[in-house]
Image (cartoon, rainbow, N blue to C red; front, side, top):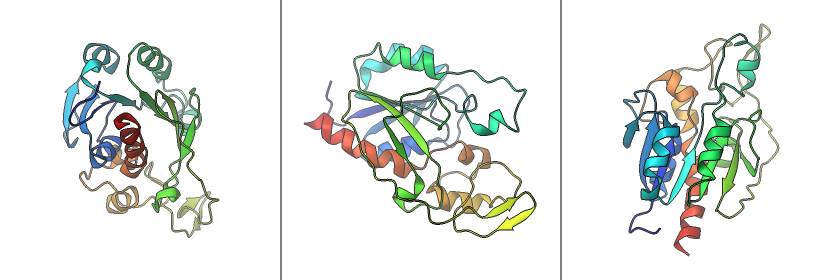
Length: 219
């Protein structure tokens, strides 16, 4: 399906980091989230993504899903032990495999997904490492170049302060930066919600691959 302006569906949209990248690449954006997201800058449908995708996917050219990462993240396996988080990657993948559209699933290093490529903030001149991995279907393979890290994250580790130009965008302890610092480091300037930014993806990531997806779909 091709439309005058291509449309992307963003399940688990959060505050809209991924969505903003697609918008900047020229797509019309619609998000889905089970929580209220008052700072999400585009149209959003509130509800269970696994139920809604099946009803509306035909209206879109591509789907880019980022199921919550708490099940797989190292923080959950460490300091958050004892909390129970659902693993939404398998049911999301199963659902997307049944639709006739290109799709992307993004998550953290420990996630149970095929890692077709990895993105890092250093690839885009950002002050965050923020490694994220992507499983894709129906779009061309991407081969981003990841340079070796030469800087370090500023903050306390085991009571010792370390200088560095990079910013840790998660948690509250260890000398973590201010919300203003996080906004600058992530390239997210439309919200001051600290928790929302901590869970977001820098828009530069999706803007980079969305432009390539757009070129591919146009051809």
